[in-house]
Image 1 (cartoon, rainbow, N blue to C red):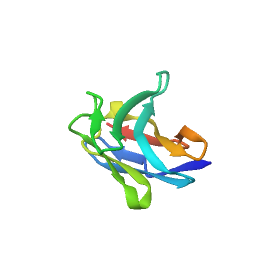
Image 2 (image 1 turned 90 degrees about the vertical axis):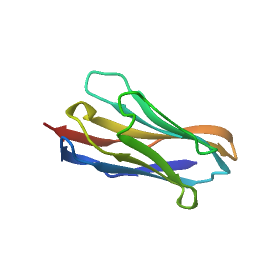
Image 3 (image 1 turned 60 degrees about the vertical axis):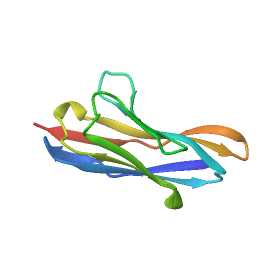
Length: 119
């Protein structure tokens, strides 16, 4: 079993910055992909950033140039640095990880954390 525990988030003014963390624990052989999703009220959950095993990253157009996804393999922790935040970034943010485990490839979610950007 793998657990993803998120930290960070909160309330920030427009133009400010926040950093989210996602720490993985459990039986992990290797990381396939990890990513950050968000879900705003009344909207579907959307992927905003992803990092694959080799370290390549991808971003949604809405956050490109403002958000940075990174990973510390030694700590099994993924980060999302969010700069130049806008009110439209307000959402619940979730981390997601796809790992190779003793049970095969499995997908796990963090508990979610609220990010609120005031104008």
